[in-house]
Amino acid sequence: MIRIRELYRLKPLRNLRLIAGEAGLERTVTAAVLFEYDPSRMQLPDFYRGDLVVTTLAYARGEEQLVAPSLLALMDQGIAGLLVKTAYFAQLPPAVIAAADRLGTPVFLFDETYIEEVILELTDLIRGRRRFIGFEKEIDALLAPGVERTQVKEILTRIDPIGAPAYQVYTLMPTMRLPGLDDRLDALFTADEALARRTICMAWKHMLILVVHMDGDEEQDAAAWVESLLERAQVERAALCVGVSGQYTERSAYPIALREAIYAARAAKLEQRLLMRAEELGLYAYLFPMSENPFVCEQCRRSMAKIVDYDTQNRTNLFHTAKIYVQEHMEIAAAAKALYQHPNTVRYRLGKIQRLMGMEDDATFAPMISLMISLSRILGEEGKE
Image (cartoon, rainbow, N blue to C red):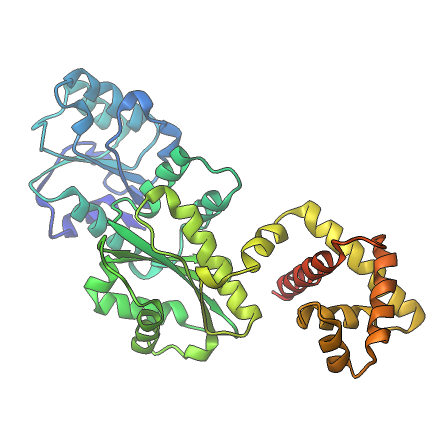
């Protein structure tokens, strides 16, 4: 984080001038947030203490009466400070100036500079060496079931305030202890300004999530891009599994893109692959959402426990037989060969499993055992983390 006084370090800000709230120059800033909404639709709880709000006041163009109420409400919310570009208003109402001085909320005016450039410069300055942290709550919110389009838009004002014509998400999942990964990538982004400007980096759980901005008609070779990135950062390639989302243009698709990249990285780890694209997920596209459903997970554990308990009490190996059966695509002959058993022995064991599961003469047994074995594998891997 930085202090508001440090805004004078921003070279792109032309003719930056403080017009009120000088007493708050030592306030700390944790995020730069764009504010260009119609105040009648604005949800002020989405602005927090520590936010430095940047605006052109475009929403009030031709309706000057909107300026004072909206800015007063923002300051009452406890924001750290306010940056106003003089595109539409060369000065602010006296009531705003008085409130800023009373609350100690610094208010600055600046000219000409593109507001997008200001947001990017502020974000770089705020993050500094802390580039990869600070957005876990926002990612959790985007991944929450039933997140609405309006919520996505609000969250992205913090994660990706500027956006791009198109974007793609990469998830880097270490397969072993990899100290200094974020430091190496941070050094690369510091050295390559163009790369840094088109890449948003976020740490989430045990992964690093990279959102890469692209031109609308740009087709990016995902494998080549990530190989180049890790080579330049001097990161051992074999130490990471990478998941790649599809390319999207709609910002409302952020939750989908995030899930695609995260699920693809997890699937790559399970399949012992270095990289997996979202379109390669196959059954995993359904299994991973199931693994996040407590009811489904409990049903799976109960059924698996019946088989494992039977094996323990009777010194059998039904569970291993089920795993090989699924591994061999539910083909009895192939499973028998892999187990060095007669096909009838495999049939007998599968019949025993059916009875334990209460699925005698049930045509859905094969897909059900496949789903349960695959899901138990995912749950088992998660338990190791």
